[in-house]
Length: 299
Image 1 (cartoon, rainbow, N blue to C red):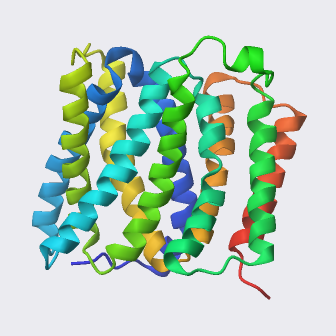
Image 2: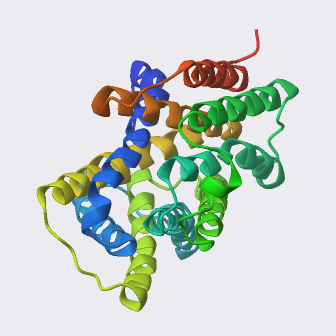
C-alpha cells in the first residue's frame, strides 16, 4: 500500500527532510575512519534491505506489477544510491574536504532544473531561475567562509579523481531523482526503495570486493554512524524525498537541497563550536530567500 500522510506532516516534510539529510555529513564523518567507503555502504544497504523487508511485510506493500517497473526502480537505486553516495564517500576518502564536496553537490538544484525541462517537460519560470541562482550564490558564501578558495589550497592534498567522482555523484542524484519521478510513478514507496537498495548493494559489493580490503573496526562510533545512516537516512530521508517528488514539481523539491549545507553549518556550530561569521550568515539569508523564490506559489 502507498503511505497516506496527514496535512500537517506534509507541510513539515521539507523541513524534516533537510534536517535529516544534513545529518548525513555529520555521521559520515563519525564513521569514515572505521571502514572503507564501499564496505561501509555495503553494510548500510544490506541492513536497510532487512529493515525494509520487515516493514513491507507489516504494511502489506505491493510489489511492482511488471518486471519493467522493477528494473526502473533498480536503475534509480544505482544512480541515487550507488553513484551518488559512492562518489561522495570515495572522494572524501581520497582527501577531498567534505565542504568542498558539498559545494559541488550544491549545483544540484540547477542541474535538476535543467534535466526537469528535458526529461519531464517542466517549465522553469524566470522567478524560479532567479531563486536557484540566488541559492547557489548563498551556498558559496556559506562554504567559502570556511575554506580558502585559491587553487593552491583547494587542489593540493587530494587525488585529481576526487572532483571527477563528486561531479559524477552530482549527475547521479540529479538524473536519478528525475528518472524516479518519470518512470516509477505508481510504484509503492517501500517496495520501490527496497529494489533501489538491492541494486545499490550489488553495485557496492562488486566495487568493495574488487578494490577494498573490506575490513571494519567495530567501534561504537561506527555502530552509531551506521545505525543512523540505515534508519534515518537510507529509509527515512529517502522515503521523504520520493514522497515529495511525487507530490511536487522537481525544480521545487530540488531547491530544498540548497538548505542542506547551511543546516550542516548550523549544526556544526551547535555541536562542535565551529564559528559562523557574517559572510556565512549572509549566505544563509540569501539561500532562504532564493528557496522562497523558487518554491513559494505565485500570489
